[in-house]
Length: 80
Image 1 (cartoon, rainbow, N blue to C red):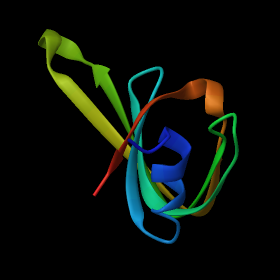
Image 2: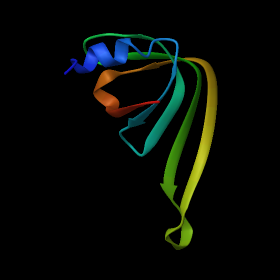
Image 3: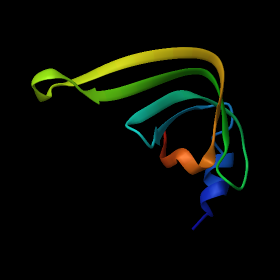
C-alpha cells in the first residue's frame, strides 16, 4: 500500500477536489503540496455551502487562478 502523500504526488497537474472545514469545497489543478498537506491549486473553484431560509442549502462559488490551501483546513482529498 502506498503512503498517502505518494498518492497525492501522483496527481500533480491533475484536477482534485478538496473538502475543507467550514462547509467549503475546492476543485482545482494540484500544482504543489507539502508534508503538512498545504496545497497549491490552479484554476480553483471554491464552493461554500450554507443553510439558508427554510433550512435549504444555499451555495456560493468563487474562482481564482491560484489558491493556497492551508493543510489544517483539509478534511479529505478526492483524487479522480
